[in-house]
Every structure is written in C-alpha cells, then in structure tokens.
Amino acid sequence: MPNKPMDQMVSTESLLEQFNRSRKYSTELIAGLSPEDCQAQSMEDASPAKWHVAHVTWFYEVMVLKPFEKEFQYWNPQFAILFNSYYNSVGDKHPRNKRGLLTRPSLLEVMEWRNNIDDRVNRLLKENSAPELLWLIQLGIAHEQQHQELLLTDIQHLLSENSLSPSYSTDTPNQSSGPSPHQWVEGSSGMVEIGFKGSGFHFDNEGPAHSTFNQPHYISSQLVSNGQWLRFIESGGYQESQWWLDAGWAWAKAEQITTPLYWYKNKNNQYSRFSLNGMTPLDPHLPVSNISYFEADAFARWASQHLDGFTGARLPTEFEWETFAKAKVDLAQDLFGKVWQWTSSNYNAYPAYQAWAGIAGEYNGKFMVNQMVLRGSSAYTPAEHSRFTYRNFFPTHARWQMTGLRLAKDGV
Image (tube, rainbow, N blue to C red; front, side):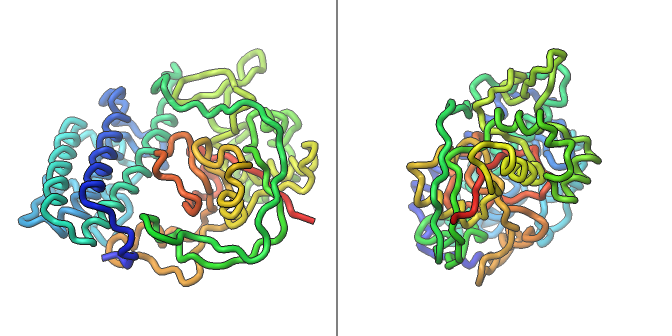
C-alpha cells in the first residue's frame, strides 16, 4: 500500500459524497454525446470518451475492490486488459493507439459495468473504514478528476476534426476576464519552501516539501492573451528561427505549425477559434491556449524584444510560479481555471522523493523524464482539483491540452 501520511484521511460519509458526486459528473459530461461520439479516437494522444469512463471504472475495480472486497469477482476479466492504461504491474494492456477500435464492449455495457462498480464501492465503504481503503478512494477521485479534464480536451480535438465544426455545449465555462492593465509583480526571492505540506490529499510528485533558492525576479500579473499572440504571428514569429529552440524549430517546420491549435483564418484574413462551443471569432482578450512548450518559449524570446515593457521576458520556473501564487494571489489574475501555464522547469523528482509503494507507485514517478512542468489549472479542470503545489506535466510538443503561459523576468 502507498507510503502516505495518515492525516490525509477524511470521514467515510464525506468520502462517499465526494465519490458519488465525482462519478455522477463523469456521466454528465457524456450525456449530450452520441455512442458514435464516445467511440471515436482522433489521435494517439487522445482517448475515446467511452474509454475514459471505462478506465476510471477499471481503477476502482482493480485498485479498490479487488484487494478489499470479500469474494471479489471481475464483472468481466477481459476488461482488466482493455481498460488498463499504463500499469505494467497489473498485466497486459490494449494498445493506446487502438482504443478507438474497441467497438465492444458497447457504451451501454460499459455504463452497466460502471453502475455495478459504483454500487459495490458504496457498499464496501459502508462496511470498511480501513485507512488504506479510504486513501485509495481519495486517489480514485483525484484520478477520475484528471480524466474528466482529459475527456473534455479529447472531445474538443475529436470535434475539431469534423468539417461541420459541431459544438459540444453552449455552456462551457467562459475564459474571458476582459482587458486589464499589465503589471510586473515582484516574486519571492532567496530561500523559499516548495511543495505540499499539511493535511489533505496530494499526489506523490508534490512532495516532499523542501527549500530551494529563487533569484530575484518578477512575474506578470496577466496571462498572455490571444491579442498578444496575434502580434507574434503577424510579425513573423513562426517564420523566424531566431526565437526558437533548435528542436522546437525542427518540430514547427516538420508539422507546419503556424498558429496555436484550433486557430483558423478565413478568406478575409480574420481568425476564428474552435472550442467546445464550436467555431467563434477569436477573442483578443482571452488567454492564448493550446500551445506547446516550444511555442511558449519562442513567444517569450520574441516578447522580450517586441512587446513594450517586456524586455527580458522569459518563462518562470515552477518554483517562482508556486511562491508567486501563494504570496500574490490577490494581485495576479487567472492563476487557476483558465489555462495551464508552461514553466521552464523539467519534470523531475523533488529532493528525498519516494514513489508510492504498490501499484500506485506507477502513477507519477516513472514519467519523470522528457517532460516539462505546467502550473495552475484550466477551464476544463474540476474546481476542487486545483492546488498551489499541483504539478502537471507534458512533453514539449503537446498542445491539445488547455495550455498557455504567464511571463517572468529577472529582477535587478
């Protein structure tokens, strides 16, 4: 079982409420989708909606019921293979790039299985309050919240491939906060404390809490906007190699990248953007999103020389971002709930880090290579899934997630 602090425990009643609310929200996310919508896979990085709701159900069956339920039996033993993601210690997996080919089981059967697992978890929690069980339920809830966000980003990518530009919903959260004056806010310098400390659930990669050193610096009070990014495009930012890391330039040329993902130019040279609300005119005040680390880094270099007041602009480190967020939350806009924000930090283990024991040890630690850290949360992130210490991570080319940036600069 995971080597976690026992003060993370919550009451059984509270946990039951959180569990059932989380499970209900996932079904609400697919309520307006057809079985065909839920079946398709638009690219290898994305997964079908049916697979997402099945995988999080697999988690509870394998991680929770199997070790704790008396007289446990699989609903269907084959599902343990079909809906395993990357847990090598559990057993075989269906190939990631072929999840869209899983026409069987049907969506209806997946939902019947999901209801069965929900009933059994509820029954188990009413009979057993072992700390290890309660912790695994907390992990399961956090895990499902991650997949709720992924489900939305993957559906957005899927629908963007449809020439009709269909909308998922007209009720998607609005990211716009309107124009406001930019200011540089002095960050915390010197020795600072980083990482999760105290009670409450957190992932293993958020700790242990430790001290690190920040050089004097400033961080922007605002996220970079679509309007600012449009200036980058119009000034030739995607055509000039001087702003780009060599690997980023090679990627942009090979993939013919000339705008953020989901930007489209019409015959009048006006840009639109595709979102879960369908195709709409580009709002210059919205934070730019769906950009890669390569693009974010190139923009920072360009902004340093082309945007008034942004001389010396760069991406913040994740430690600068965390201490800034904790200390300046009243001065900064949109730390959470708009876009994930790229940092210049590699996704590495903190000092004295130890992965969780058991199956859950495969959750974060084994991905600590060739990834960059993002901080904050996006408009698609469940509200209760945001923390100052949360460390998201993606490879440098990824941009189908709601990824944006906030600039920093060195102090004097």
